[in-house]
Image 1: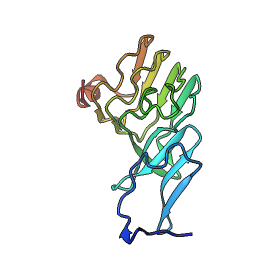
Image 2: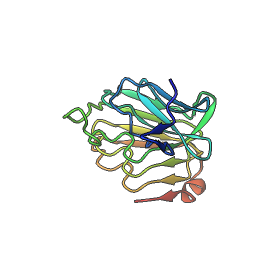
Image 3: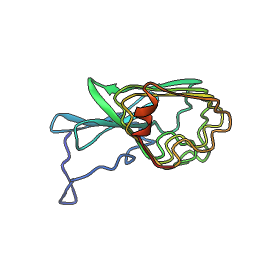
Amino acid sequence: MAINSINGSTITAIEAASFDGTPLTKINVDGVCIWTGTGYFIFTLLNDGTYSVKAASGVDLPDYLEIPGTYNGVTVSKIDKNGFNPHYPIESGRPYLYKTKGLVINEGITTIGDYAFVHLLDLEYVVLPKSLTSVGQEAFWDLQNLIAAYYRESSESWDEISLGW
């Protein structure tokens, strides 16, 4: 069933978290999937034709997590603000159990949003892609067990990244 209006008003926007916590798995507009909740991730189609990614609501992430740089053959360019923050939002009444120790962010991702990975208390290492151009404010704050961060490019390239801390 296709719905294009609510109470006579045309639907013009669907916020990224509008259907979190529901059994809905995807939203199509004119045959194009604009939102998908799958496994550990929720992908949202952005205006530039790429996807953003965040953790699916209510899931407990694995010890080692690899964030994809593509989804359905399309680039995943952004990790959402608070995308993997276990305390935001607390829809289930408890912080999500994120025991992730290793995190690999794949090529294609250029932007890590503000507070994207705060409070991942067990995280020991993170691997950042050479495609990275922007890291948001306090994106990796309060990582009490972090011992290594690897960047897949030169120190000169690192100096060109916009850092929000």
